[in-house]
Image (cartoon, rainbow, N blue to C red):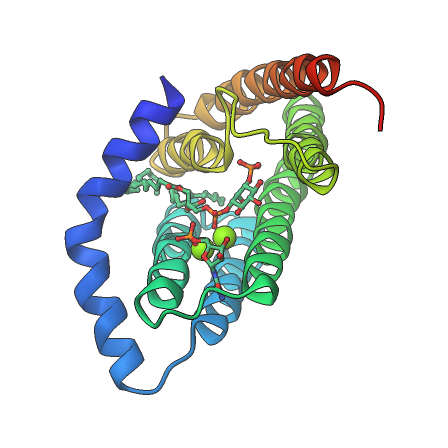
Length: 206
Ligand SMILES: CCCCCCCC/C=C\CCCCCCCC(=O)OC[C@H](COP(=O)(O)O[C@@H]1[C@H](O)[C@H](OP(=O)(O)O)[C@@H](O)[C@H](O)[C@H]1O)OC(=O)CCCCCCC/C=C\CCCCCCCC
Ligand SMILES: Nc1ccn([C@@H]2O[C@H](COP(=O)(O)O)[C@@H](O)[C@H]2O)c(=O)n1
Ligand SMILES: [Mg+2]
Ligand SMILES: [Mg+2]
């Protein structure tokens, strides 16, 4: 289900992304520059706005810059230059951006004395990091791990909708979204570990 959503959403975005990618390449911008700039933009949105309680502005800025994640890979493929360092940089920058988003949310909720919300945000931070780590470790061992109901896009969308609604005055939305996200992230860790376990059984010992 999550995969169907991602594939459909991505296909829909392609029409917008490709001309922008082509224009940036023509202007001499490199995919790595887009990767780093997108991350810096997410940091500004999350830490500069979200952490200070400007949730609507924070969510919108994070959304715009998080979407540039679709550009860098497209640019790399268009220029025939997908690189191993680019793949490493892209994934590493994603972890920095995600940490800033959930760190910012936890920081703001702490200032609101919302202990339950802080606990949920920290769970999301840890579980989201684990979701990605399990996949990276599996891939490092030569297996695949492209499964799970709460991959990065879904995680950002859930916290984004919660942050936006709370910013618009629907007070408990962010806290509810964070608890929901913590649950689906932990479930995804289980899904990925089970997927790797099945592959490891087939392959046998190293
Ligand atoms: C303002 C909030 C309201 C909500 C409005 C939503 C508007 C958004 C508009 C449209 C949504 C379009 C969705 C686009 C779908 C893209 C599908 C896709 O293919 O995504 C994957 C893609 C590439 O990923 P990468 O290959 O670069 O990265 C991989 C990823 O990191 C893996 O992580 P894992 O899943 O394992 O955890 C790694 O394992 C892998 O190594 C790595 O390669 O792109 C993205 O990830 C882009 C995501 C863009 C989604 C943007 C949605 C943002 C929505 C809200 C964010 C708001 C945050 C709120 C902050 C609140 C502050 C107070
Ligand atoms: N600076 C970059 C960024 C990405 N890549 C390549 O694209 C893949 C990810 O594509 P997305 O569209 O999902 O971002 C990544 O695995 C790399 O192969 C790159 O080369 N340089
Ligand atoms: Mg990318
Ligand atoms: Mg990325």
